[in-house]
Amino acid sequence: MNARQFIYGLVLSVSSLTAVNTTAHHAFSAEFDANQPIELKGVVTKLELVNPHSWLYFDVKKADGSAENWGFEFGAPFSLKQKGLTKASLPIGTEVTIKGYRAKNGLNFGYAVTAVLADGRTFTTGGAPDAPASQAKPQ
Amino acid sequence: MSKPIYFSFHWKFYFSVAFLLLVSLFGLQACQKAPADNKGLSAPVNDIPRLASGKPDFSGIWEATSAADYDLEPHSNRKDAPPGAGIIEGKYIPYLPEALEQRKKNFAARETLDPAVKGYTLGVPRGIYYPEPFQIFQREKDLIIVHQFGHSVRTIHTNNTDHPKDPYDWWLGDSRAKWDGDTLTVDVKHFNGKTWLDRSGNYHSDSLHVVEKWKLIDVNTLEYTATLEDPKVYSRPWTLSVLLHRHREKDFQLIEDYRFTLEYDEHYPPRPPVQ
Picture 1 (cartoon, chains in turn cyan, yellow):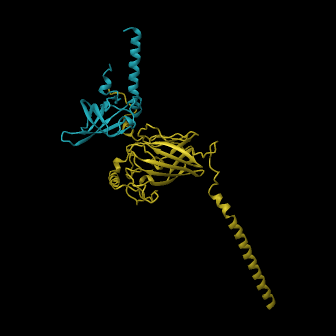
Picture 2 (picture 1 turned 60 degrees about the horizontal axis):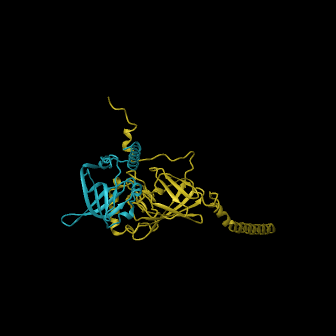
């Protein structure tokens, strides 16, 4: 690695950190448990693009065939828009796979780190600076 | 003796007739003048503040004196509300049966569930008749409404643009307006379903669509009407209306009113750590 690559790398890291910090301001650890990672696949029932945090609700099929509704916190609408995620990306009735962490209150809520759409596109959805995914250095 | 009496009778008679004639003449004149005088009672149409373009100027600090925020529908007094005649055309909100049940649940738990109690943004139209002032700043291309409660800021676009194609679910919706003579008609949609219409649990969903009409009826009074449509909650569109009064107190201004920070107030400013 020469000096120029090092500088580029530094600039990119700093700017990405700044971007994360400006799009989220609420603590991950207040509501979600970093020791309870979770992955769920379901069918979208509602996408709320609401400030300061968006929420995705989807039905997950249980072993007995009944459906259970889960809600996952996403980042702010504008940060999602910058990543190309809008209402049209997750219409009601489409399949979605969410990776993230469960809520501390034990109810059917969680914090979404990534969302994989039915067509295979993947979005990084969370933005809290203290979330485990944000702390891990992107490679 | 009889002659003077006779004369006196005639004199009184003629005087009375003349008097009545004069009275009726003045009366007639007064009647003819009446329409012109009435015009003076309510301000002439052109006697409202206007922008350089001639459009009405709504700039100022406004507030409703109505008890609407306690309950939009007619209600008698109760522990947490004064009585009110309601501000709805037809008196009651035409809820769908299931939505009416939800409203009853909201009412029962209003003390804790009312979004205003949590300090949330009031939404549209509640922010307009909520009993706190709001200020309008007006330009050709838009009107900015700043609410004292929560310092919510709403933009009403008057630049002939339409609602965005990729909307969010806004707390105050997206407002696009057109002038219809001296009336500003505002189309508001793309709401979230997290706000209420009053503190008694009247509510809407994220499908709410509001059409507002704003009109100055004199220099210091705005007439505000809002027609609400929400197929998930109401069986048909319905309309409410209130009058908004201009604040004219000396040096009147909005004062910051954030509610959701109150429980943290004791921690600010932060004290130095105990050694």
